[in-house]
Each structure stands twice: as C-alpha cells, then as structure tokens.
Length: 486
Image 1 (tube, rainbow, N blue to C red):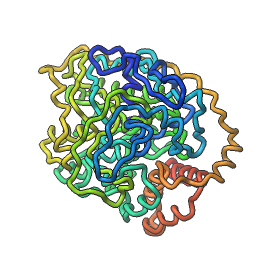
Image 2: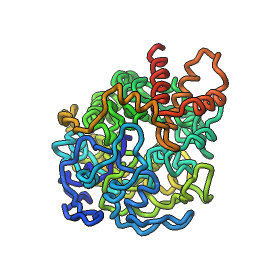
Image 3: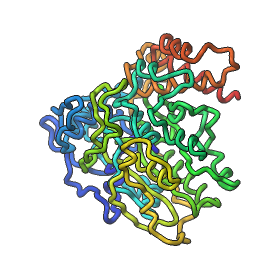
C-alpha cells in the first residue's frame, strides 16, 4: 500500500483498453479563471501537498460550499471541488511544505503519462489485472484508511490523529486496539502466521503497522531480506509490505519509497519492481497473490463519484470521531493492480472493491470469520484469478523505472535556515507527526534496557516535551539511531 494518489492521477490517461479513465474534457472551476482541464504529464513532485483530511475531501467531492451534517447522509457528489480546495486549504501547510501559488492550482488535475512516467505500474497493469472500481475505505486521510486495511474499521477515527487522541488510545502495550482486533490478531487467534516488512527498515521512517496494538518492532523485517526469505521454506499466508515514508517530520516525505506527492514516484516504482521480481523468481510464485494499491487519493482529482458504503458497525460516534462521520461513504477511487499467474493478461476488473476487500480475500482463502460488517460485505479478489492453470509467460523481470525527474524549484531554505525555522515551528494540533511520535516512542521503549519509565508515562513526557517540528525530528533521529546501533 503506497501513498496518496487517485486512480485518474496515475492511470486515467494510461490508454489501457476497457478502464473507466479520462477523455480529456473533465474539469474543475475556481474563481473567475478558465476551467482547469485534466491533462498530462503530472509533475513528479508537487510544490505543495494537496489537502486530504475529512473536510478537504468533502469539498473536493461535493463542492466548495459542501457541509456534512453529523451522522447524516453524505452530500451529493460531483467531484467539482479539487482545484478550489487545493487553492484554499491550509490543512497540509506544516513544516517546509509551501502553499501553492496561482500557477499551480491546476496541478491536482494533472495526470501521469502512465506508459512513460510509470513504466513498472503500466507493465503490471497490462500483464495482469487493473481494478478500476477500487475506492479508499473512507473519504479522508492516511491513518483511518490504513486502519481499515488492517481491521475493516478505523476504530471511529475519521481524520488524522491528534495528540490527545493518540494519548487516549496508547496503553502500556502501545497502539490502536479494535473491538474485534486486526487481521493480524485474527490470524494469531486461528493458528496462522504473518510476516511484516518495510523498505529500508530503521532508516528515515517508521512503519505504520506498528500503530496497531500487539505489533512490535521485533516483528518487523527489512525488505532487503524478502527475496532470500521467499526461497527458504516461506509458509506465511499473509505478508504486509510497507514503503519507507522518507522525511515525514517536515511533511516533505523526501527520500522515501511511498510515492508521496512531495517526493516523487521513481523509488516507489523501484520498490514495486523489487517485490514483484522477488516473488516471481521464488518457489511461492504459483501460490501467490500480490496486491498493489494506495491508501487514499492525496487530494488529486478523480472523475468517478464514490458510492455509498456499508458501515463497519451499527453504532454512531466513538472516541476519535471528530466530524460525526458514520462511515457510510467510500472515499475517492485509488489505483489497484492485482498480480498472479492465474490472471490473464490485460484483465480489467470493474468489481467494486475497497481496502477491506484485501481482508475479505484472506478470510475467504483461509476460511476465517469477518472482522466487521464492512469486510463481511466486501467483494473478494479471488474471482480475478480466472485461469485454471498457471501462466508460463509472466515476465521474470520488469521494466526499469523512468529516470527521476529533476526536482522543481521549490524555494527550499538552506539547511541551517530550515533547522532554525523548524525549531520555532509548533507542531500542528493533528497530523501524521503525532502518530509517528507514538510509534517512535513505542520502538524507543521496546529497545530500552528495561530501565525506562512505564510507557504510558514516557509517552506523556514525549507529548509534553516535544512541541516543535525541530524537537520532533530530533526525537525521530535519536530513536532511528538507537535502531541502527542494535
């Protein structure tokens, strides 16, 4: 699961026959400017991070004046507010991510020339299956959508977590706990195993799966070991691979492999290629199913209106529900590619999917119960595997990623000036940084020699003592250094 791109942003101009893509006339309006048409190519790196919190997504899908009545129906969707929101939202203006000027308002309508800019994705999409009706699990940001991918619910979280929300769900064991647990808890309860990897583990970022209760740093493995692991009696029925998120402390995400819009796509294409080739050239190939998707749309335009969604449970509200969202609406459509030797070439699957379809597939394959009403109602991916015998023509290696585009002139300050600014920049009330602070604290405690204070007290100290972006970055670096010294 990569980061922050809509389906049309990455595949709308792919030219793949049979997909719900773009015809080039789709547009958004803003102020008195001429309509902003979809066009290509997309910039490899954005000059600013488009908003994608709950209220941002509401405006993007329903228009500039849209309002959501708590626990009511989601307003009518016309996908008309993406440019307006990018031009006016301040929700992502943290750290060193600048706000766009008028010349860049239309960047959220720009789409990749898939064949030339994303050759790895294009090859897999045409060699295997592309799903053009896969939606994020809720209309909002990373954390609740990734929780849905693990637990078929976000535990009532409908926005990026705040410091107070993180503090309330972090117990002594650390991490979010769900009423019926996560897919990892379900596997443990039923006698099954799993394997967790992150690209460049212990460098630059922490894996978000550590935000779940019961998952520990000792459970993590570096992706560099995957190819060898797969060749040596690999029996895990579920493998979760996370990208590296890069420099998340300053909200630039540079240096990672998640394809975050502030960074670029080449490292993520390299990651996909590495994972595919490790599986393809291993004994597990003919019993494998590889799913590549994105947590949410990242504020980028998509032309398809998301449909209503089955709610995960029958109870409104919850301790982390700041917008009164009842989770009866899918989020924006995202790219999804499914790989298996039992999938015919050039398969386009129009079946309705969301992230809980991954859980449904695991549950159906292993004959396990559902976690919530959402994954119970989800469609499984197994019908895409329509061939009776494994193909023998699947490529053993993939195209090379396109060369990294030259970084845009972004008026990035000198390191010394950036450091001074970050020391004075207060942390936002909510955002990814608070989730990563909790995970860093969890890792810090687990790697300690047992002399540290109880974790609940330690986390309270972190939230009290770390108030600026610079202080948060210093703490992240200290914990990563501890990891690397192990």
